[in-house]
Amino acid sequence: MTESLYDIPLKQIDGTTGSLAAYRGKVLLVVNVASKCGLTPQYEGLEKLYQDRHAEGLEVLGFPANNFKGQEPGSDAEISDFCAVNYDVHFPLFSKISVLGEDQHPLYAELTAAQPAATGDGPFRERLKGYGVDPTNRQDVLWNFEKFLINRQGKVIARFAPDVTAEDPRLLRAIDAALG
Image (cartoon, rainbow, N blue to C red; front, side, top):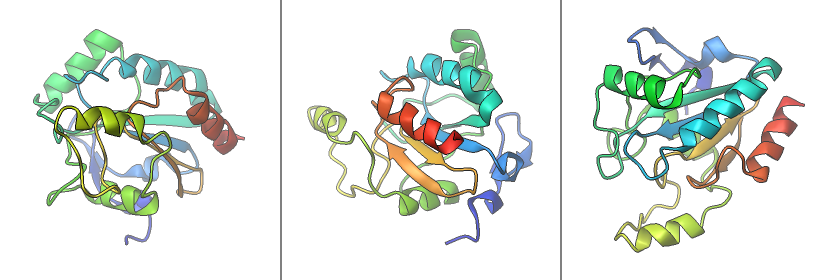
């Protein structure tokens, strides 16, 4: 286990290196995103949430990942262009990473270890079974647009299933409490 989520090296989508330390003292909503997923329209709600709550200290952080049925095949430049053109995304995006498996990024290893279960998990998991997707490890990220909430002290305080949208009262209550 790393000393802090803030210490894990990250690369922004424009290629610059850094870490979550730039967001110390903020409430973070970390989301693994994809451009060719049925849930991709969630970008719109995430951007609205970012615009509505950014002044209060919320950062929405997008981490493109191609772990699920090849739904994020593009390069970082293509992903950045897609998000800007189609969803007018202004929240920070990071370089494409792996969120599960042998090449899982250290950030996601820490996030899933800190919050092994997701709020709202169940209905979406059942729908995925209909497509032949049935992850055996329930701690693994289930699909694109899973959300992790990190408080101002850098502690992972909640995790939300992929189909829990930015407008979901459960997510909004948790964000409000963390911002409070």
